[in-house]
Structure formats: structure tokens, C-alpha cells
Amino acid sequence: MNAHNYILNKQIQWAHRNNIRLIGSKGNRGCKAYTQNLDDNLFEPLLPEVKGNFEEADGGELSGKPCKIQAVHSSSALSVNIFQYWKRINQISAIAAACRFCNRNNNTSQGINFEVKFSINDKFRFSPNIDVVITNSPKSRFKVFAIECKFSEAYSLRKHSGIDPKYIELGTIWDDIPNLYKFAKTISPDDNRFIHLHPAQLIKHILGLKEKFGKNKFRFLYLWYDTIGLESAKHHEEIEEFTKITEADRLYFHAMSYQDLIIKLAKNYRKLNKSYIDYITGRYL
Image (cartoon, rainbow, N blue to C red; front, side, top):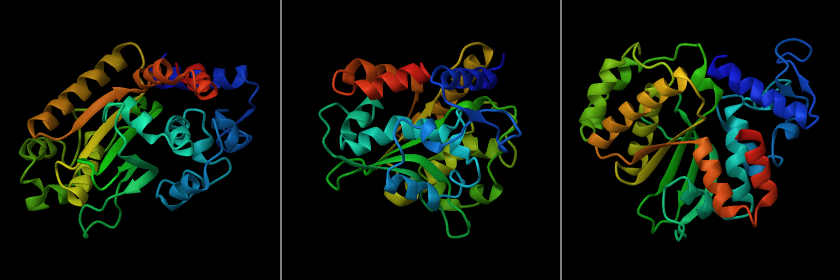
């Protein structure tokens, strides 16, 4: 069984264990991997502000019947299930620390938003959506902690895109990240090197964050769902290669698996957050 199907079937079995009815991607047609109701796929219903984030984004996560986020293997549902809880209880510093952005004594993290856009250049009609952004107080050294989240899509057989030559031609935006620029040229216009990691997407996020805040005013996390076997090993190799390139340019980029994050949350916060911890460990570990 490949990694994508492993994740999909693991989530389908979670639904069956919890007596959650599943429907196809077209209702009566398609793979039965969508919950009948959106709330069945979430630990808690979407907060109004979070719902607004998704409605304003370009991904159409809440469009259609069923909508994309109703898929049990939805990356958006996973990110909401992990991060929204801490927004609701106003303990954002706890999840920021668990993501290794800061220490547990940090008290500068103030907000969590989903599907946030940072413009790279006016010549581009659309700006990429960053899955989760933790905003910090003005006195913080880092203005934001940004997170790109991956679930089953990292193991899809669908080939991902390289970076459009228009980005390579942006000129001075690359001046302080020469190693990333050199690498970007090797995956433009097509990326024939990476299978699971999508470096073109990560590079565009870095460019947008750098334009908005400056090179040293943000931290960026690649948060992915790990599996077993050769696909996992290859994914690890690709993450390590990309991380070394960002380190050479002194960018604050790091990577972490969802499993490591969930285990850390369970270890440090189970006592006061039992229902949440039981849900995320029971579903995703």
C-alpha cells in the first residue's frame, strides 16, 4: 500500500470506529471518504473568523457539496483540528512553542489565522495562501510564525509544478538569498527532482513573507504527516536538502512531522486539555 492510500484508509477506519457516515466526493459517487456534515470532520465547529479565512481564500475549501474540507484526508481539516483549539482558548503561545518557534515562556503570540496571503509582486494576479499564520505582538523579534501544512497530498501521484520563470526574473528580491535563487533556477520552469516536497510552493511563501516583513522577521515551518517505507525516506531526504539550502541563506526555516507535534502536545498539555488531546492522538497517531 502506498503512503497516500495508507493515510486515506487510516482516516476512513477512524470514521468507521466513531460511527461517522461517509459519502463520495460527488455524494453518491466517488470514493466514500467525505463526512456527511462538515462538523463530523472537525474536533470543533469552525469559528466564525476561521470560516471567514477559508471563504476569502482561493482554494474553495468550503465550496461544493461535499466541500473539500469534508474529506477525512483533508490537509485543511487537519490544520484546523490542530490549531483552531488554541485560538479558541486563547493559548496561542502553547501551540507556537510546541511547533518549536519559541520557548514555553513566550507571551508574544497573539493570533492564529488560516489561508493568509502575502503579495510577492504586483505583476502576479494571485498570491499564494499560507495554511496557518501565528501573529505576534509588535515588540516581538519575529512578526509572524508561518506554517505550510501537508497531509496526504505530499504522497499523491500527481506531479507538482516547478517555479515560473517570472519569479526568477524578479531581480533584487533574490539579492539576500543567493543559494535559494540558485536552487530555484534548477526547478524552473519544471521540477524534475522532487517527488514529495513541493519546493516551488515553499519558495513562493518565503518570497511573500520576506517582502512583507523582511528576511529576519519571520519563522517558517514545514509541517508534514509522516508515513513508513520508501516514500517516507524520500520525503525526509527532500526536506533535509531544502532545509540545508535555507540554512545557507540564514533563513529561519525548519521542518517537523505532525506526529512529533501531536506527541509533544500530548506530553505537555493532556491534563488540562484531555478531550482535545484524546481526539488528535486517537485520530492522527
